[in-house]
Length: 211
Image (cartoon, rainbow, N blue to C red; front, side, top):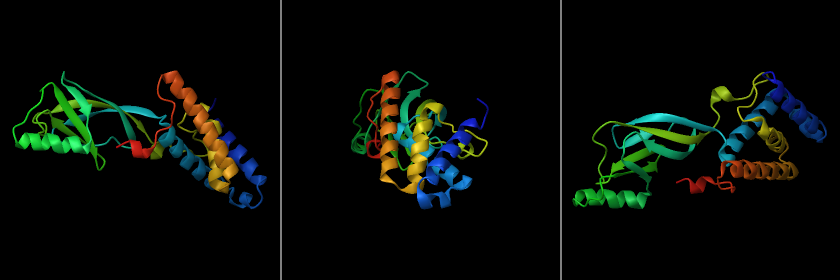
C-alpha cells in the first residue's frame, strides 16, 4: 500500500461519520481530524503499549534520563555479568542507609529505581556506580513528533490499530459516549489478541502501576 493511503482512508471515514452527526461536521476540517487522529494514536500507544524500541544508555553516575518518549521500560539488560533488579523507593532508602552503616549484600546484584523522569542506579552496597557501564533499555514509547500523521503520512502504528484510531478520533471530535465505548471495546479486543500472541498479560496496564 502506498504511503498515505491509510491516513486518507481514515480521514474519509471520520469525515463521513461526522457528516452524520449534525453540528460536528462544522469541525471536520482535515487539520482537526488529523489532530484527533494523532491524539488517539498517542493514547493507544500509552494504553496498549504497542510501540517498542530499545537504546543503549551509558551509566557513569547514579542518575540517567529516560529514553525520549518512554512510557514504561520492558527490561534493562546490563552489558556485564552483574544482575540488575528494579526496586521501589522504600528499598532505595534501605540500601542507602545500609551504605552509611557499611551493611552490604551480594556484589553480584545491581539495582535500579525510577524518579522524576530518570533511572537511578545503585550498587549492592547502596552506592552510586563508580565506573562506566552500558545498559540496554527495551521499552514502550509514544510516537515521536516526526511520526505524527499528515495528509500524506500514515500512522506509525500498525494497520491492525486502524479501527481503534477511527473510533477514537470520532469520539475525540464528538465527545459522544457511544463512540468512546466503541473505541474502548476495540482497544481492549485488540490488546487481548496482541498480548496473547506475545504471551504477555492481556489486561491493559494503567499509569499508576508504572512506578
